[in-house]
Image (cartoon, rainbow, N blue to C red; front, side, top):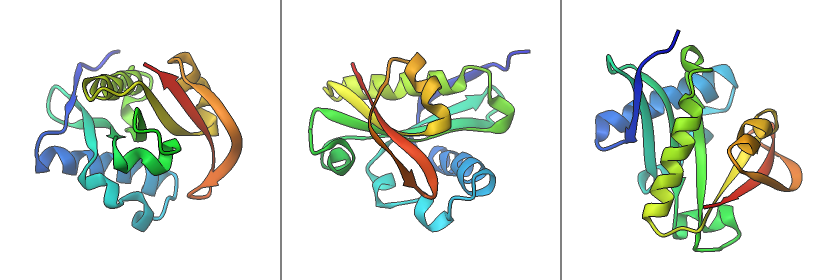
Length: 155
C-alpha cells in the first residue's frame, strides 16, 4: 500500500524541527549515533529537504551543503555540493521517499549551479545510491562508528 507524500524544501522553523526529528529517530535512536555529533554547525546554512505524509507527519529528510560549507566534504571543489543526513522513517521505507529526497537535493544543487553532488554513504546503502547514478571512490572509512564510502554523481 502506498502512502501519499510530498517532498519540499524546509522553509521555516517547524519544517526544520521536523527534519531534526526524523534524523533523531533514524540516526540517534536506531543507529546509535551520538546526538552531539548528529547536529552540527552546517545545519544553519544547509538546504534541508523534507518529505511529509499528506496529514503532515514527517517521513524523511536530507540536506545539501554548498559553497564553503561543502568544501571540507568535497575536496574543496566549489562546483560540488554535499548531500548528507539522508534519513527515512522506518514506516516510510520502501515507498520511494529516499529516491524522492535525493532527487530533490540534486534539483536544489542544480538550482545553485553545482555540477556534481558528493555524499558519504553508509556501506549498506551503496547499492541504493549506485542505482541513482552515484559512483563510489576511495577507501572505506568509519564515520560515527559506521563504515562509509565516498560517492559522487555528476549532474
